Image (cartoon, rainbow, N blue to C red; front, side):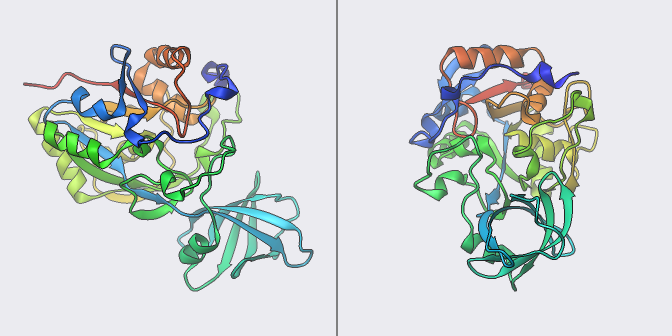
Length: 340
């Protein structure tokens, strides 16, 4: 497959710059019959006994500004992942002159470049007793480059489930949820469970290869709690469906798949790339996701899940004036008929 197979024309005014209020008032396209809804109606589109799985990762204030100690030149760092050895991977702009040994002073503390990984990626050492806390204190919310508006309330880029700090971007589909949606799911007899995937580089990086199969994903940390694995097993037994809220949940569950429709609890790094004809999807039955940018790995994953309906759904959304991607509308995709 060619990357060009997953490109299309997206008008600039289709890219949402600000989120809607309230969160659950965004539009929701049910791609099973191409019917229009609002997100508050999600519980009505599911069935008693289904299980909704959300990503409870929290976005860190990962975009940090500093200056090179030796020249005073401004540098912007986007902190991606903390390595097991305590060092960090970061994207730098500009990165050309940030060689090993270069010190960048922050508003508080400093970082030292340890290694260059290419394409603007660095390994850095953070001079702080608690680097996570320092980054969160001196940094700001890392909105994607296509969002030029200022976000008045940084909490609007967190989901209501956000608990475990570690992401460089929000798990987008979860941004539509409100306590009212959760209450509606409970009343409908739909259970909720959580996973963690700390969103990293591939949210920002487009595919650069000509062939989809040649793209290599950046590793991200994910984990599935024991109680979520048990909830999925119980859902299978009662004939319900596993509903993934966002592509990050799909990647987490399929990374921990046991081959029988269940998952193995635990955590680890994943670089799984779900694409048509590639890794089979064995855990997720329904997917709630936003509409994604052309040429993105997120769009490829949705195409693997939906097949030919993916293109039809995108065309329906564009023709209907739906907004893309981070602060845009959502769709409900796929599905199996629940057993009685």
